Length: 593
Image 1: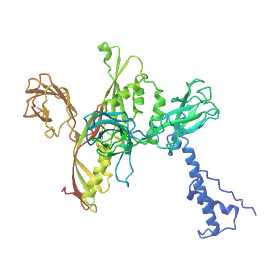
Image 2 (image 1 turned 90 degrees about the vertical axis):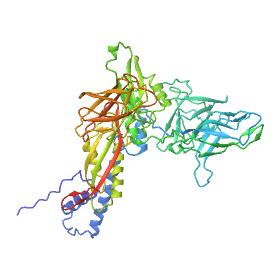
Image 3 (image 1 turned 90 degrees about the horizontal axis):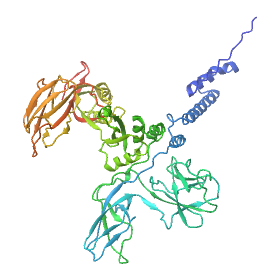
């Protein structure tokens, strides 16, 4: 009689979760223990195998996470992202401090000048239950004799240490690559000053981005911020950067604070902490901030760092291609998106310089401040290729108007669905977080339909209008005639069109479509409708008369269609009109209410 041979099942190395490991163990057990036949879940042996499968599932999870933390796209912990980007000398940005103008006041005028010293400390709230936000004056303020008020700029945060008494971090042991840690967090970016006393008094050392270019005698050091926001100071090895002498005292001055919490409202900074002296005696001084504080930003997110870190490496700190200009500008503070363009016809104008136009969208969609524009220009100046000039522009934000009928399920309240749909629309148009928006990106009807359909309680949506809101660009506009924003007309058969409105006299104008050609003439204070009936508007006269050749350009799109954007355009949310109806289950039809 032939002996029956048993073959142990092949081990499945793809079994990594609890269910797969448990099934493999139960399937393999009879080949090693044929007498083991009780596979009931309550059996103690089965319980042991389930515990082993559970442990294996956990181990595989940790192994996978360790592997994924080694690669920037899949890393999810801040420390891993910090360590990976450190390999390319990219450091995540810390918190920045808000600034505000503060007005100091005294009860009555003095016979002499009153000095409010630089660094005078103030804070918000008199209520002890609230967390105070501290501010310091950036420069000294003098309230002249005979006056009772004066204003000065202040910056959020609190300074630790002074030039005469810095914060001592430790002593040097003359070893290479020493590290000293600042004892407080969060430390505001660009606020750290490092001092070393090698026996002849404190000397300020230079903070550099990297010690690669430092010489053996260079009094240089560099900073590194870890995932917890702790700032470490790194010294050299006498090859790249000098080693502080043995026994040298290492100290620092820095400011603690920063973040969006510093963007406090008006008239909230009311408490003066520092003692103000007049003729050697303390004097009562009041303070307030007439305007809100601005400019405070939180530390850079790991999602942002994953994008900006590789971009910084790609540009290599020089701007040659348009992509280089975009990458270097995108890593600056308060920048959400960048588009670089160049005038292809500059050589036809016999211009020796290559004009690069940078369209920069800020994080909150507001126009760039002059100081921010100058900061970007100063940053690009030593990095841009010779023979280029750079100009900065705000994006052409193009609102899109929506009118739609929303059909909802019967078990939902209209107010609830209304809220859900509007939140979905807001998310779709959000210039900070939406994946749909961006320079030159078209707004597709299928995308917005999918977004609204995905809102809780919505059965389907029927659009009445999805079209770009006519927004005039006043190219030459010497007078102050104004368009009636409520009287734009876009016909049902309208197409993607660019309309040029040119004044032929102080009160009359002609209208021409890029595709449609001449579309008639109109006059101020009277409705205009194009010859083809696609476009209409009203222009009201102002106090300053218009001039011949004054010109405006208006773009329109079909009433319901994809909305195409130009290179410098960024679509945003316009007027939203929604009507709601319940779906009738039997006929799938609704009645608009």
